[in-house]
Image (cartoon, rainbow over all chains, first blue to last red; front, side, top):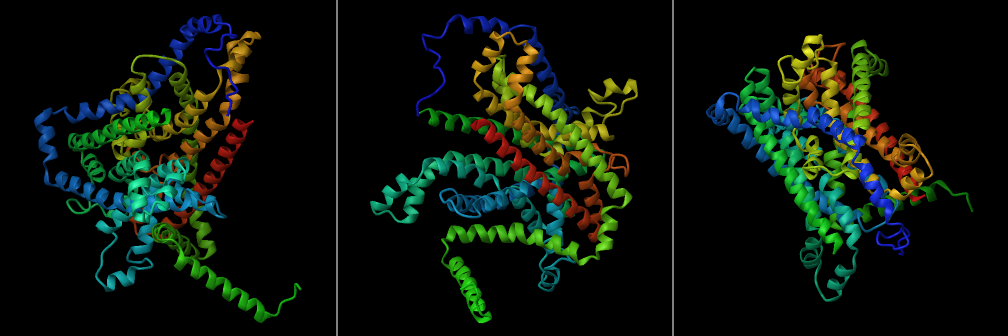
Length: 293
Length: 290
């Protein structure tokens, strides 16, 4: 409980040491290191990000808006929104149940379950797509049953939604588990002894205290769902105007040498990424302020 | 006492499965949702792939897994991903250091932007990197006069992989670095250690587990990467074709066995990497606890 390191206002510490080390920090080495880091980040992140916007508007704003209103582009946007609308709620329910099941109990196999939940992050998106094709495709396990009942999963929306949900599965559980571990069970037990039923306890006590972690998880799930390319690409069949999400549309337009149209659609996805980062920053600040209280 | 008749064993077994069944039925509903979702979404597809691979005769599996084209894609994938993860490791540590120790304008924006490779859809990353590093692009045109082609070669793949793996190192090193006490460094300084000695002997050792964890995480991500690499690579076999793209091409040709075998190889490698990462994290925790 007692902090072992010296507090900064410790009078016994010589006050000259920090003031002497301050100018040392501002010498040529620090400038060199900052410069190198910024150069590296510019080559890898900032110039590519800037390039998206410059290329998208290289034929003028008129062309930009016109290419976004093409039927195929509009369909791709709707597709991306629908994929997220299916994958995000599914993973929120799964994530919350998992967090409630695993955060507060210690038992044999808990570590195993935790790493099982993280597994989707380590599997290549292409392999994810492959697995879904092997399961629901024409030659797959359920191929005959599905064909007999005239249900189309692969090369249609259901498989794309499955692939999207697969790759974004762990985010909510991952963000909520540490929060649940930290808040403990005192308040919930108090609510229970005061006569609240389990739904009341969840909605009035648990949910408010995990809300920022949950929102953070939803944010990451949504970003990954809307941006997923590899897994969706394998199972979609990439039929223009039918099974094409926005990232697939970007690749299609690029392959057909409609670079400006590809970049116009990319602007939407890049804006999504920027918005995600800004909201993430706000949520992180919210949780940090709460920690300091 | 240790001897038991077969009937006893059977009854013990039966009661065990009965107990398992009962526990599942009586389990809280959140457990049922979790296990049900995990089985349908994760375990069933995994089983489908492994059983598909087991259906094939072993000799055929071996033949596909070690065919010249497969071997060349492993070579391209792993060497490129390894180099990218190393570059990411060095520069990621540098970026983390600069962000923790120095103040400069727009530092918060720079800090937030590190996560862009996580947030930016990979297709967009591939598209913009391919144009930027192509012969006519802003950066590619600087190298073109020297006869260096970046996009549509292995070099381009390396750049996409470095982009993907960069945040892993920064985000694993940053917290460890900001918790590190400056006292030890100052002690080393005051005892006459040079800047280089202080870095090499005092700062680097406690950071090493987290740097290695970051590199392993980045490597594991880079090995499986598809979206950005498929766009920036020319996908020529034996030159810059990587394993995930080979799986995709096999599937496009309806060669399910070929795709499955290479997919299983990739999956086993990612599982090995996951074990390595867990080991590195445990090592890091032990290091910090000391």
